[in-house]
Length: 157
Figure 1 (tube, rainbow, N blue to C red):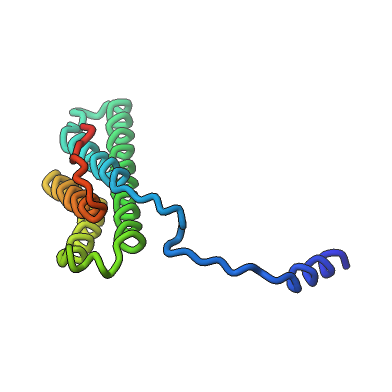
Figure 2 (cartoon, rainbow, N blue to C red; figure 1 turned 180 degrees about the vertical axis):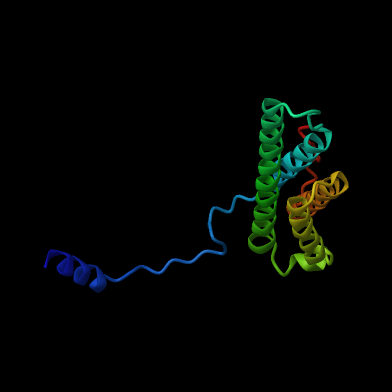
């Protein structure tokens, strides 16, 4: 009886209408988080490529190798997904149709960057990871130009 009464009461309360230009109406956008994630993708890719499998059949050495390889791969894929998420937020929430006049290549740039994120998840390819970072730099430059600023591109690694 009590659950029915509570449900009935909640159904009869009027909900306030909320609206926002994006999923989070904070208005705080910055491509820095995409840069950091893309740098991590490149770093993990380099680490994966530099790993050497152990010689012989030492189970402890193989366990350590497999653990390290798995960890680097998981981080690389996580960070590639994070890069994609951050780019998509900028593309879909920050950039508006009026930005296309200034940046006619905007959609192509973001589309290719998102595809590179996927390619970095699927493969272990340093050239692809480097191209992803370059794509994020292009987004960085468009973003800051759209704000009338010229913030320097600085990588952490």
